[in-house]
Image 1 (cartoon, one colour):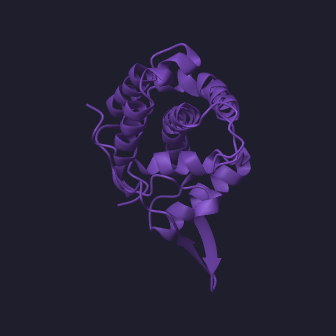
Image 2 (cartoon, rainbow, N blue to C red):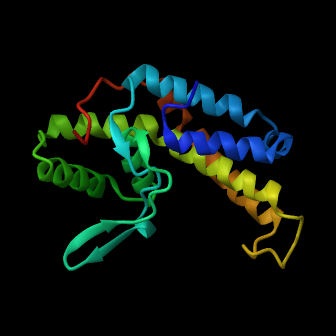
Length: 193
């Protein structure tokens, strides 16, 4: 069962609400793809290692009086710290910026921030990155299934076909990253403890 990661409980609900249209959108079973990806991550990383944010991205972070403040916690709960970081890294951070972020983060948490430790965390983040793309695919497929075709009056102001275009773009990113699920990322200490 994939109920250990809170964010993926939401994914299951979106798939339920989208119904068969979710699978028709991309010509495959998204539910089976989600479950297989979650199984592979659990096999590699073990049980969830953190209380995660679930939707960590630049738009959910603000700077306030010199501190970084996290917003939008409705997807928070048991998860993988590497998943949160993978979602943040989808913002196209270059490899040097990723390394700098993890080094700074681990140092601030009083954790081992040696090059080997950062490399191990980067491998864990790479392993869960396909899940971050797959979650986005499901969200956009749900939006397409929930939006009348070419309804310009939709509150989102996007048509069903526009949502499907976003889903297909995320699917392409997922397909590029999917082989990482086969990598044997060594067990690493959690980013948060």
